[in-house]
Length: 254
Image: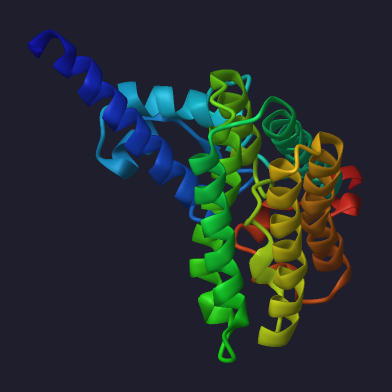
C-alpha cells in the first residue's frame, strides 16, 4: 500500500497540473506566441517541476502546446481546417462505436441508460423557459450521452481513442454549442442534435449498424456547421471559450 502512494500522489499532481494548465490555456491566461518554461509554470502553480513536466507532455500530446527548439513551450493556435478535421475524426470514431453496438449487440441496460440520458435532454429542451443559461446542463448531459455510447462498446482501445479525439481543442460534442446569440437559435440547433440522439438509439436497438453510423457521423457535422457559422459571422466567434486559439486563415500566411 505504502509503496504505491508516491505513484498515486505523483499521478494526482500531474492530473491537477494538466487540468489547471488546460483551463489557463482555454481561458486565455496563457497566451499564444508566448514562451513558457517548466520553471515559470511551476512557480505559477506553486508545484514542483516533475508533475509540471508530465502535464506539459500530456498537453503537447493533446495538441495544445508545441515544444520550442530553444527550450520551453508555446500555446498553439489552430486553423479552422485543423479543427474541422478533428471534429470529423471524432465523428468517425463515434460512428464506428455505434455500428459495433448495433451489429454485435450490447447489454439492454446499457442502452436503456443511454436512452434515459436522451430523454432527459429532450425534457430539458422541451421547457418553455429554455434559455442559453441552461446550456451547462445540456453540455453535461450531452457529454454523458456520447461517453455512454463509447463506454457501452466495452473496448479499451475505442474508449482511449475517443478520449483522445475529444481532448483535441474544439472537437468535443459540446465544445461549440454556446456560440448562438439567442435562446431561440440555440434551442433550434440543439433540437436537431437531440433528434439525432433519438434516431441513433433506435438504430442500435433495431440492429441497424450502417444507419447508426451514418447518423452519428452526420451528428458530428453539426459541430462543423457551428464552426463555419462562427468563422463567418461577425462577433459570433467571441461566444466560444478559447476563441483566441482559433487562427484565421489569413493569419497563417501573414
